[in-house]
Each structure stands twice: as C-alpha cells, then as structure tokens.
Image (cartoon, rainbow, N blue to C red; front, side, top):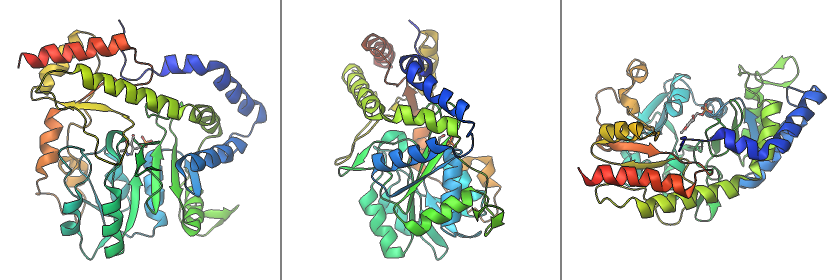
Length: 371
Ligand SMILES: Cc1ncc(COP(=O)(O)O)c(C=O)c1O
C-alpha cells in the first residue's frame, strides 16, 4: 500500500479534463499576467469566504507582507503573533523591520492564548496576527475585542483554514485583513505558489492592490514602494476549477479525521481538540505522543509518511534571534516549546481511503500501546 502525506497527483487525475481545459484557455489567450481568470477567482474566493474584496498575489508569505505594508506599520513597531506556526508568519513581519512579539499557545487548540495577549501589548504594538493553525480558527471574538480596546489591527493568517467556521462565519472574514496560501499542499492548492489577501475595507483593498503591483495604480506612476506579487493567471484558472470542490474536500478531511479519532485507541495519544463554536478543516491531522521521534521512525519503516509541524518554536529560530530589537530573545514559551517535541502530523488529504486510515491508525496505536 502506497501512502502519501498529500496526494496531489490522484486529485489532479480526477479533475484532469477540467484543469487541462482551463490551463489551455489561458495558454491560448496569451494573457499570462492578470488575465480574466484572476478577477474571476478573486470574485469567487471573496464570495466563498464572505468578504468584500480578495486580492490575488504570488504566495501566502507575500500576502502577509503586503497586508502589513498596507496597514502602514513601521519599522520598530511590534506585531503580536504565535511562536508555534510556520516561519513565514513572523518572517513577513520581521522583513519589514517590524518586531514579531510572541505569545504562547493554548495547550489544546495550539492557537494563540488570548489571556496572554494583553500583557504583551506595549506602546509600539500595532497589530495582532492570529494563525488558524492546522485548520481551526483561533479565538476570534476575544482577539477582536482586545484589538478594539487597544486600537490594534487584526491580520488573520488563514493559510491553513480556508473554509473553516467560527460562530458560523468563515475564518478569514474577521480581521482588517486575512491572508491565505494556495501552496500546493494546502486544502485549496495551486500547481505552484499562489496566495491571497482578503478584506472588507475598501481603502485597505485599494492600498494592498497597489502595493502588490509595484505601488502603482496607473501604469508607470508609482505612489509607494511596493512589490511585484501577482496571482499568476494559470494558477487562478486552476484555482477556479478547484474552489468548486473545496467544501467537498473539507468534508472528506473531516470524515477522515473522525475515523482517525475513532481508531486511535491508545490512551497516551493526544488527538486534535476542536473548541466550541468552530469547525476544523484538518489541513493537518496532528497528534501528540511522548516518544514522537521513535513513532516517526516506526511509521517510516511501515511505509507511512508523517511530518513535524513544527519542530522549532519561532523564538528559537536563528533568523529571529538576530533581528534588532527582538524582545523574545531570552524568553520562554513553555507550551510551544513542549509541543514541538510531541507533535506529529499523520497523512491527511481527501483521497485517503478507509483502508489506509485503518492501517495508519493501527500502526500508531500498536506502537503507543507499548510505551
Ligand atoms: C501558517 C502559514 N502562514 C504562512 C504560510 C506561507 O504561505 P506560502 O507558502 O504560500 O508563502 C504558510 C504556508 O506555507 C502557513 O502554513
């Protein structure tokens, strides 16, 4: 049995006629930069999430950087985020000379702990950047309330949770901006790099769109220093096809997660926890076990891939240790530090079969029962 973490080829084969025809149309149109498919996908994606505006760009990392630039946050200012996320969340901040200030995570959801946000706010804090980790929205009500009280912006890092719900509304529709990644392995993945910025604010939309195109609204007239970060027309055409299936795929992920939950019988396996009033779309299905590295090796010998999201908390990353003004150089974030040692993501994608899940869960359970 061949098992993959993410099975992009099987998914492509199922959609081949639709995808091939969408790509061929772009090739025949010659409109490779900002062709009509980009606008069509922006409109479909904004409708899907329930936001007024969506701006395609070249990656999720660019989306975060452009959003922060559009908010006018300056070097030396601070943005609060979590140390238990992919590097790009805080990289996009630090690249602009802004200091990422970390706040530890909740032990059950792995999302930012809201009761620790206020103590981390200083006169330099300008925004909170929650990450909806693994596909589950962070505590948005509390985050928005803190932001309102302290006049801070909220930028949702929604790279992993497209389609998940918080009190019945889609994640990505709450902040001043939300940023999404269409990295191929994401639950809505392009066939290359791609990303998107979303907002309900007209002024922010027009500023972010301008920044993404060299700070220009009118050709060859540049109001600001921007970046060159556009959603490729070919990727937009592919994403337009795939978006129609996203809810179906998210449901399949939830079904697979429910099966893992049922079959992972060992008591010492900590399974994903879903907080009330939200849905989890299981971009990752990540469990915790005490002998994580040994389990990973055991799974490897059985031909079962796995991944560690993430092995190093961000405050320990050399790149952040080096940035001037980094306030967390000697700080400890005990929950994040602990969880990086225990977390392991099992294969998760809509194409997983019941047989595969049974095999994987059986291998994990047998190993863990002997610990
Ligand atoms: C939480 C998070 N933020 C940001 C990113 C960056 O997205 P991209 O790889 O499209 O630049 C990713 C994904 O890679 C991510 O998982």
